[in-house]
Image (tube, rainbow, N blue to C red; front, top):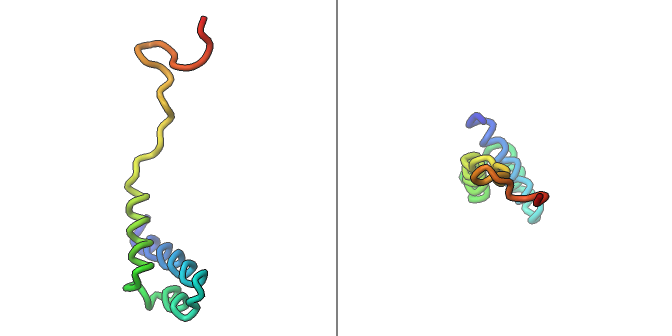
Length: 74
């Protein structure tokens, strides 16, 4: 994700949060890019960075030492 795309997503999330809280003027400012110093935008950017760095979930192991961990016991 590019920096421009990241900041746009953060702005959208922050604007929605502000709008949900009843702050229409501030939401409009953030949507237009005039409120990048708002705490809501900074928090959204931080969360996007954290979620982007998280490793992909992998499936639990199916075998250990060549034996199946779950399933039929024959």
